[in-house]
Length: 307
Length: 307
Image: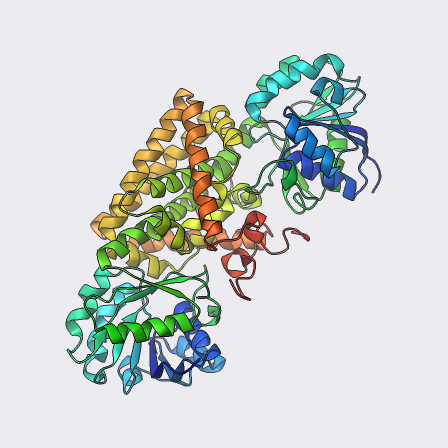
């Protein structure tokens, strides 16, 4: 593949940005990758690992001369970063982000940016439960979706950013910000909050010890703990900035949960059986769409060899 | 390893029983394995796959001369099976089960059994989202826990059943039935109901299409769908028979969820951040205890090679 951007500035060097650096290098998509992060420790690790061509000490410095700027910091920090970099942005540069919500990012970042840049918010739906610059890897986006929210931006600039994401292995979809935030509330934000809650309940229950919860977690609980181990700061910001859609889905969830609880209490086995049969079809759809593995237990490593 | 039981009768030939057959053969733990299942189709598949030495047409026939009888049918069917096999049980035989609840099984099965058998309920905490005789494999129990509920049974008979489970790769723990049912409500039953609910909500939401839910499931949702794809009949019976403990945990869950919803609504970021930080520790405990993998995304097969 050929170079899509001559100089890419990565602001923030966690899981997503470091994986982008690895993925861009894998396919030669960027002439130069310049990175920065707020903490000295993160910058030092990035220098040690060498996934950027240059690591600089400030966001303002990083964006100089870049034709693509990627905001990869927690959603709550994006406004301040946008204010800092705005005076240094090159004419015709594209500014994008990788935040998990889109309306709040547009509101926080948009007003700071000069007219002479293209602002195309984005969100790669990929991640693991690990965070930080050491957690990145080139294959993170392979066969995953990246949603772009062009929000009236120039079509050529959007097509160029699409080429970058496709070059990093992703499929690209385009939608508006409110729909993005609702879809993500369903597929990600509400599930994460529910997983956090269930793990918290288990930890809290004095008659069942933590060591019992841990020992016997293979019975189902452990599937929840993976996503409940994700970065706390990132998730705090997601819930605070996608408040309405998340609360709406949680309201629907509670309603359904109460209906199932009542079926348990009244012994309505048919209701339960019908409900559980319906949910199997969704799982089949996900496997057929190539978004998960059909191997038992997600093919957890070694499950079939040892365990 | 040497033979622990001369003849093992497996009543029901789904995931657990077929895996037991494979695991007993792997280590030569049973002189003969006799299996049966209610449906002709299941018996035919078991004959085709050959994981039993003999497949017979009725439970009464299967238990004749067996020194271990394993009830591996849905919890709601165990009482009827116990009534059917009771007259045929050999003097000194051990009867066990693999059901996910223990108090209800003791109530349903116990009264039917003659005094001359040892009744030692059991529950291997292992499984996958697949069901049926084709889904079994010898490694299912390796490094997993099996809980036995001796309930006053003979210590020698319990030690012998423990040897069988250890021979099949499991660790054995002993507890009383009420505690078992509470521990499982936390680690398995409530998480399953919550996963079923979340998947049902996603399926129900008309403004987000099923295909969007499926496409974008890698953002977190898909972790829920694995356990929500489990056998509907088994899970209906679990909830109907472990009603009190499950409803108690769901009550606690709802309380915590409401507190987090309020923190979102009022913008209390500190509460959210503290909560999410605490849940990370549980995940670490599970990995350290060898009950899950630390590979990103559970080491979903190919995640690091392709995806």
